[in-house]
Image 1 (tube, rainbow, N blue to C red):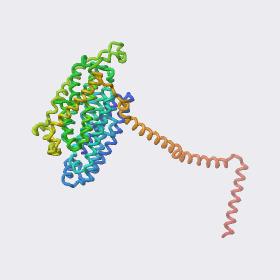
Image 2: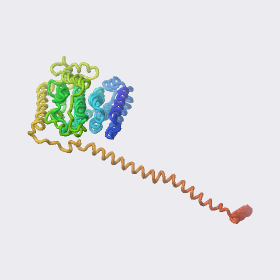
Image 3: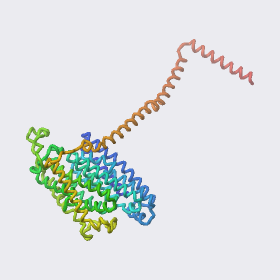
Length: 499
């Protein structure tokens, strides 16, 4: 756990530096600071959990902690506290409610950074951490796993509703990442640890593909990120368009692409454990298919709206998008292949095809042990069909709205502004911070400085009074000497009388 924490902090530092890569831009500098501060909140939870785990198990190795959980040496209360504190850290690093704020703003960094760190690796470290301590979760109170599942489901649905109204090509993918991470935590809370890792791996394939594809689009569009100024790019960027569509079908959950298999396995376990959260998962899957189809249509289909904004690029009416060079296209093609065949590592047809589960067996219990012979498991193909229908429905609705214009476009301002959550938190934190600083400034000016200045003024007053004694006149000195002599004689006389 200690070595994990060192790597945890290392990738956090890399993220901070890379978000602020264009540090001369105020938005990038602010985004970097937001990521740094938000992750410190989560890191506090991880450090506290480490102290607690060491005091209870006498070691920070996963083996010792998990063995203590298996043997009963780890009390239920302690296990629950460790699990919840680590989950706080996971919420910070993996951008879950309420600590998700930093990830959308992290899009200020270079697009390859968004693909590598903020989609495929660093943000999923919280998922890995919670999966790695699954024995601790097993002996925790039941409500601990429920909290993880509910937070994951809420984050998945919340971020999906925001993504449907975003117009920045990278912001759509950012909120999509938050939503998919919520799916993974929903799986962990439902006991589907292998399914969570499975979705983490497939998500790395198709989300890195989508981010790099968006980077290719931005490059071809001369740094334009507003999807309202794009359209019909498949004609001028055919390879980018093809690979982006592969990523779209994978994340939308269309078979046989990788995202379908991993998301379906999560929904299977969620249904077996909590049908209410299963409905939330289906609604999230519907919205995912909807907003990703919207993005594909706005960027690659429809009218070429970039012609209306030629002068915005300083091209004097001669601006034309272009395909990216081979060095940018080759990774897209490789990731496209992985997004298609990646699901083969954990197919539902037979246990012999559960390659990922067999590989994770030393640290994670068998997936099917969590649901056994439940109705969900016996009817998994029916649930699989439901997931496909939901995905296709989301795609169809989006096509009807944005391609066929048969349904009025509804993009509420509140969704575009992310439910005003960021603005509210900024107002609360900023307002309370400003009030605190004003109070501290008053204390500093009136109390701290008042004491220091008061001592100085007192000394100055005494010095002013004493200064009058030394006037420079002989008669004054003679008078003072006479008075002093009289006082001394009076003292001796009085002393003699008393004695």
